[in-house]
Image (tube, rainbow over all chains, first blue to last red; front, side, top):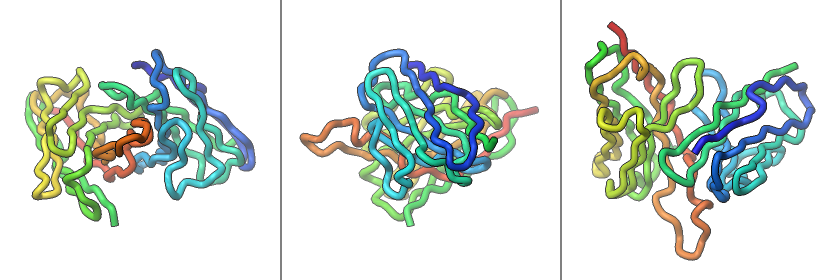
Length: 106
Length: 128
């Protein structure tokens, strides 16, 4: 299953609302997770089951979608949110990640 | 504190072998599934392998099938990745990641499919 994220790069300002899209090559139901990765660090789970916020993740992060179209939204960007974001499908093996979306400060 | 720590990375020649170790602490390792994921410097994440809590289910991505072997020792809270016939393109940071080991009855499965704890990674460099 191929996952395609868009955009690959996103430039935004603190306080902006941004949305990242993840498109699956076939129906994966709600078997989708989102991760955040900062330079030199391991990925961190943000959202699972397409829309469930992981414990401790700020409520400005939100996920939606099912089937083949998913999105990650950050309602009001904070300085610590500038990072790379990955979607991952866990419907079938091999489990695949999207290519990543790098969110940069404008 | 829930923690995963990888070790065993290093410099190895093409065609060589390396065994990675992931040591778990702060949770009941024996009931959780585990994964290996790697990341080439500057590139994206690549899922490599999965092992269920009892080792009864094991999966690999095609690029490592037949060369890499995942295993675990629940008595030692340890996850392993035996890597043989290493190639330059295997150069990467290797992460282990925890996944819930079971789904409660009557609950949608997708609520228990995610990787919620990651180690800090260990670097493997394949070069002559």
